[in-house]
Length: 397
Length: 202
Image (cartoon, rainbow over all chains, first blue to last red; front, top):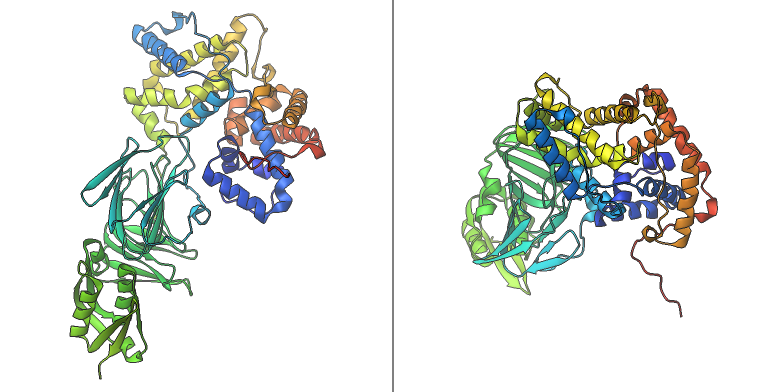
């Protein structure tokens, strides 16, 4: 739950996310509550009181050691099989006093594996917003970072808590801190001119296009799965009817059970679009919910908050993941915006006639930017010049 | 898509268990043994007795598995069942005569062990809180415990304590009011930023 503005002691201690934070603080929850205090400095006293109370309530809890847990279990198994449960008295339990609070609390959180149904994470506060620079950057839950200088990186999160990072032919393995007590979030930032893919712990595959940022848990432990995307991503979601998958963007949220779709939510675009290839998804904006069918595109206008749904050739929208750009009467304007993201170059034009030109065909993005522009200029009445890393497009008379 | 139905994971686990899947039984045990043990230890200092009762709860589950009805709230089922077993065992021991749910002790004190505090002033405040805790009735303590440590809802607490919703809420709120009164105003300077060291101002 996102902390609301005015709260008294009772409201704090009746908020499960507050209790979670007090008993089991994480870097993320620390940030959330510190932010709350910065914005609501007058609540500090009440918050401190509530925090103190909860800490106090949890201070004297007894705990079972792993050994005791298995001893009780063995006796249950034994009694169950011998069929004389009532008469088999348990004689002696090894005493494990003295291991009080710390282990007790961690045991407590490990067993509490039913986080609330709808996760409510404040991605804005988690997101690393520093300029991504020119390298692909992976940020771990503890905020350590790893940069990749290659054009592309392919990450794979295994269920046993291992992370494989593949760059070209090189594979690097990372042992992740496999703690089930908190949701560990990783972030992948793909700058302009680069692309990446991630295979998440549930088997879902995510391709991230240039200039995109994803935040996702290392393991999906709750009743639902949720990731955050800014920019463009193509997803093949692993089917799990009991754990719906949510993709959160700054404007709309998409709920899926198992499907293939593309979502484009760039900050500098005036719209967010969702393109569905297979299955069914439900896209919700603050004011409406739309259910999509395969081969449809949903366009959400940020300004009006309205969305439209229409049929389309969906492959145009996802070709980027295989290094193609399919254009079907696509405006040069829009192609140029995509190319400048993809290759991280500036492309300018001043001639307004260019706005009315459209292009149909297939561009091979595995070529360099210049080659792609040559193809465009051979098709449309255009030419280009390159000066100081800026490309100018000129209409031929 | 019309109306949405969300299947509760407890319902599935429970029905797997009733069908005789051993994994499900083990998962139920692992998920709940710690919180059951902690809850139980508030009724008695005899940890072996609590372990015996947990054992009995699970044995009974296994024994009557085919006769059990559907539940979507395993935790509540187990908490109720453990409390019943503990009351029964305490009565058998002859320590208390005719102990019932209403007159059960509930030991709940705040540890004032020094190694577990961040500062001297925090220790003083815990001592004060502990004193205030002593003024609560056992039922108030139990309700507060179930609410904030076991994280049960007011409805669930009512079922464990055999009270209606309103009485349950009243127990918790009156208890909290008493604790709040005990707060000295000037002693609230907890360190929110853990790990930030005081700067040396020389």
